[in-house]
Image 1 (cartoon, rainbow, N blue to C red):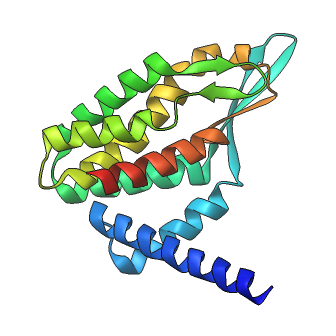
Image 2: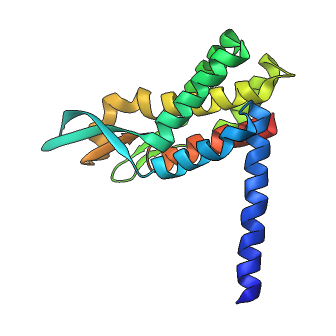
Length: 189
């Protein structure tokens, strides 16, 4: 039992170091890294309703997830303003959004499915082409915002096909996709 506890602590410490490295690489000061992580993880449980829309026999509430959409949006805006690579970031977001949208599939009762590794790889590749030396920040913004826009925002007109009472922008699988895409893209770049 002691071995398992020590192993869990060891894995947790390694993951924290990797996340700290990733956030530092994309341009988040170390003093804010823990706050961003906590807000992302706790916020993944919070959906803020935006509006209701008719869907089939009833209505669907469209909400936005705090950890999967608002935190990445705010962090992306911070990097967008701070890094001074606005044009490159916008091009990266557009490319990732277009590719993610072309691959996104509506799965009734489940959500919107996108191959998990495609967004971070595309975001990393695009950011390396657009901003070789400062690619991690471009990769984070391109990957997280491109995934949100391509998977969720551009598919809002099709939410009736999901057959769900609540649809959350950046929620459920998208939270994982946005979080992992931003971090993995930043690490790869």
